[in-house]
Amino acid sequence: MLKLGARGEPVRLMQSQLNLLPTRLVKLVADGIFGTRTHGRVLEFQGNNQLEKDGVVGPLTLDLIANLLKNLNNILPVPPPMPVPKKPSAVRLVTDQLYPSFPSANNLITQVIPPIAVIQTATYRQGAGGPPLDFQIMPATTGRLAIFAARNKDGIERAVILLLPAQVKPDRLLICISHGFGGQGAKTRARLAALNWTNPLSKPLIDYVLLNHVVNRWGAQTLAAQKRNLGYMQIVRSGAAGGELGPFARDATFLRQVLTEMSDLTNGAFSFNTLETMTFSSGISDHNLFVSQAEKQFDIAASYAIDPVPQTRPANSKGKRRLFRSGVTSQGPPLPGSDFLPVGRWSNEWANFRLKTDGEYDYMHNWTMPFYGLYLGIQTS
Image 1 (cartoon, rainbow, N blue to C red):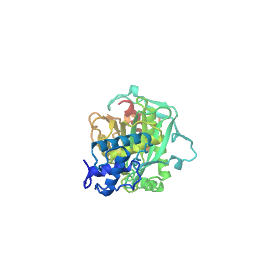
Image 2: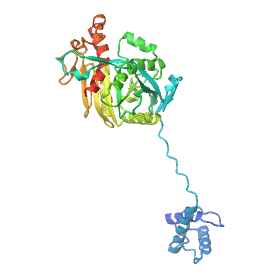
Image 3: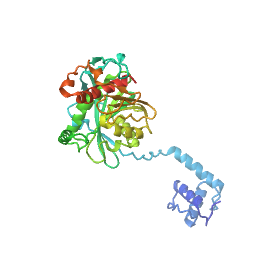
Image 4: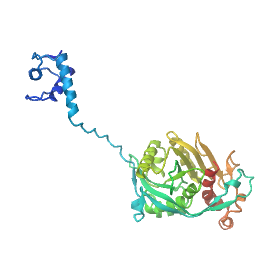
C-alpha cells in the first residue's frame, strides 16, 4: 500500500506510470516521494476511474494502472529500437583509388593470370632420391582481385591483396607471409626505397607485390592448384612503423575483423572458416609468429614453408606442415619428413639454362622454389 508520506522505488515507479496516463494536472516529478502533488494525482486518477477516492494506492489502483498502460501500448506506435553502436571499421577498399579505370562487380575487378609451368604431381615422389621432375603448362586464366587498406585502433595500416577464382566462391583462404623485405642487400633496399615502401599504400609498392608475388608467382599457383577451392590473400609488407607486417603479426582478433569486413565488402565472395598459410625464405620467423597467434581463433588446415632460411618447419599445431628445401640455403641434412628438391631433380625444368647463367643459388632459391613449391605443396597435401 502506498500513501502520503511513502518513499522509495515503488513510489517512483507509480509516479512514472501515472505520467503516461491522461491528466489535467502538471506531470509529477518521479522522485520516489509520495507528497501532496502525488496524492492529488492519485485522487484524480481514482475519481476518473470509479475507484474509492482515498488517495491510497492499493492492489485495485495498481492493477488498473497496469491494465490501462497495457491497452495504451497496444494502440501507441512502437518506438524505434535504440541504435546499436557500430564497431569502428578496420578496412576500406582502395582498388578504385589505385586502378580507377577497371570495372568491378561486388568490388572485385578482373585480373588476368598468365600461363605458368607447374610440376606434374602424378609422377612426383617425395625424397631426394626421386627421379627428375616432370612439368606441364597451365593455361592463362582470370581471377577476381581487390585491394584493401587495413588499419588497427593504433593507426597502423597495411595493404592487403585478395585474389579469388573467376567463378566459384572459395571455401578456404590461403594467406601468404612473404619473405622479409628490409633485411635484404643494398640493391634490394635501394629498390624498396624507389618503391616508397615506407608508405603502406604506395602504388609502386603495391604494383610490385601484385605483379611479382601474386600474379606471376604464389597467387597464380594457388588458383592453378585444383585439389582444393582456395582464395589467396597477401599482406603487403611495409617499412612504416609497426614492423613489416604491421598489426597482422600477432593480433588474431584484428585478423578476424579484417577478414569479416573484406568478405562484407565483396558481398561474401569468399569463406575464411578454414585457412592455409605459406611463407618463403626469410619469412619463416614472421610466419611462425603469425600462425601461433592466428590458430587461436582459426582452423589452419595446412602450412607450407618454401626454402626457409634457416631450415625450420612451419608452425602449425593441428594442421599439415610441409617443408620444401633446395639445399642451397641451409647447411645440414634435410629434416625428417621434409621435401628435399636438390638441383639434380630440375634437369627437365624449362629455364634450367639459368643454372649456368645465374649460378646454383639463384637458380634454386630465387627461381625453382618460389615458382613451383607452393603448387606442389597444395596438390600433394
